[in-house]
Image 1 (cartoon, rainbow, N blue to C red):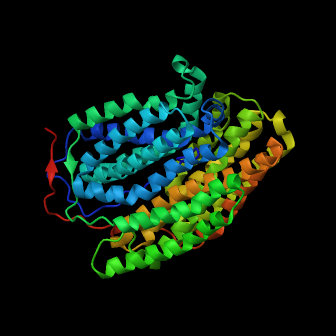
Image 2 (cartoon, rainbow, N blue to C red):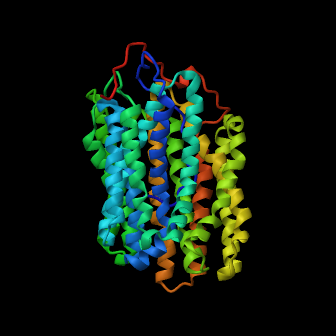
Image 3 (cartoon, rainbow, N blue to C red):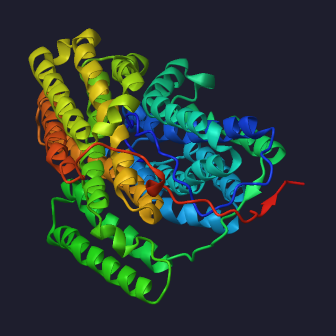
Length: 504
């Protein structure tokens, strides 16, 4: 499942790449940027839209809980596995070109997902969507850095971060609205079909308004590293998702035990490739940086907790009896909490890891309060019971998420800053996939073993609380001290002319 309704992801920090700015900035850059942002918004909505539709999918497709988990986690897994490779393809082949290929593939995969006749075809289409998104999303920041003068980059980056925040929280609400409308009697299918007109408009608009660019220095593609990293992720996720259904056979446990061996093989390959002067998927020198290690651990645990939306979405619909739209609206206070703190985020971000630790603890407290409310009220739960807890949770999310990548960027030597931020961004997606698998296994496993819906929900939420409590000490692995962004944290731009081509 390409992820549970992702709460707002951290506002990405623009990291300069070894790319020269165009000799003249296009007067149509803001219009082109708006189109690329709209496509990014669709990707973010699709990453989280499925959660609110899970009961409808289970009934009408029909699909098992395990298959539903794969429909969410498969998207995220493909997205995470392809992010770094997608960025390198853009540098190599042209960012606009790769963005358009990704958008076209995403649009086709959306049609296939909406037309799916069974859970297998839906899962395959979702994986294709995630892989296509991995081609699209990395190009947006890269084009931002190339197409805008320095004076405009902070405003463009703020819009980019806003789209991430709104898209992550807006997915369930969009899904609830479409399910409530039941367009043309198609039920859940319009949550995918709605991507088609947006995708077509993006393709036409970027062809007219956009222009292509490439990096001055093109790095190679580490295909073996990509395969090893994907195999390691699958070895971790497959037992978590399938083990419960299969009864935890020995070979399922053996697959899980193979994950560390695959990670070791990946590290050995990356070191050998770096010694030969190649371009490893993950630079081994990054793993010697405290900022990178801390960012990866903290981001993985922190964003695994975002799968709380999976538990609440299903519980509110199947146990409490809310409609998909009301269930999605019930979780809206989380977005309000994010918005309340956002004006202060930039001013407080210099406090670095202390902010990440406090935000994680605040989220743990908020989820613990939700757990107590669910346990006490049971199926008599009303949306207003959860509103204060979700509001506080949103503040904690905004407090911690934005500082993760910012700390990594500020505390990593300049030439490694962009690669470190990309690695932590991948860890965020991996964390989401792990959270869906782990929390879904606990929640649906308790239901399968005869627990009441309320007991199953409290079990799933208890897992969420544990993840945020673990994320707090993990954030202590980040370097301490106030964050100061200087030129040392940014790679300088070469002054040679960049290859720029205009469509047509």
